[in-house]
Length: 251
Image (cartoon, rainbow, N blue to C red):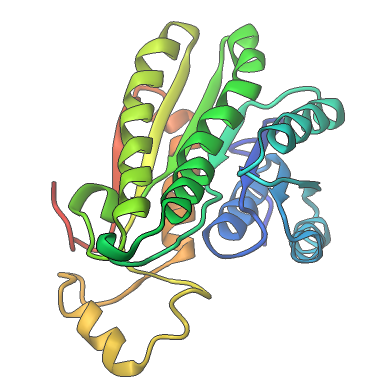
C-alpha cells in the first residue's frame, strides 16, 4: 500500500471495517493519506487491518462498534473524537443480512436488519455530523446496494434498509449542503467478498451472465468509488447514488 496525499490530514471513520468492502475502504482511504478509525464488533480482525495500514506507514486505530446498539454507537463516536479530535469523512458501511422469503420472515429478522443497516447508519451520522458542521467541511458516504434499487426475492428487509439509505442520503445532502458537507451513496452490485466465496462455480456463472461487463466486482472497485467521493475531486457532487455494478442495474 503506497501512501498518497489526496486526503492528507483528514480523519475518516469506517464502520464494518473488519472485512470485505469496509476493510478495502479503510485501506484505500489510508493509502490516500487519511487517518482512519476502524469500527466493528470483531476486534481481532480489526487489529489485522490496523496492522496492514500501519505497516505501510499509515495511521489507524480500532474501535468497538455494534450498530444494533445506540449506546455502542454513541460510545464509539465519542471514543473516535477523543482519539482524533473530529470526524471529517464517515463511511457508513456496516450491516447485516437475515435473508428469507417475506412469507416466512419473523418480525425480529425485519427489525434487526432495519435497526442495524438503516437506523444504525443514521445514529452514527447524527453522532459525528456536528464536528463537520463546525468545520464547515465533511463527506458522508453510505454504502447501499443494487438490491435497494432493484429489489431481490428473499431480501425484503435488506432491500428496504438499503433503499432507506438512499432516501436518507438525499435528505441529508439537502440539509448539510450549506455547510459544505456532501452526502452520497455507493451502490455495489455483485461483489466478490467472503460472503460470496461460498457460491459454487455454477452459481457464479449464473450471476455474471446478467452483468454486461461479464465479471463480478471487487471490494477494490467499491473502495475506489468511495475514495473519489471522499476527495476534493467530488466537491460538487452531493445527493448522488454511484452504482458500482458492472451495468447489472441501470436506473
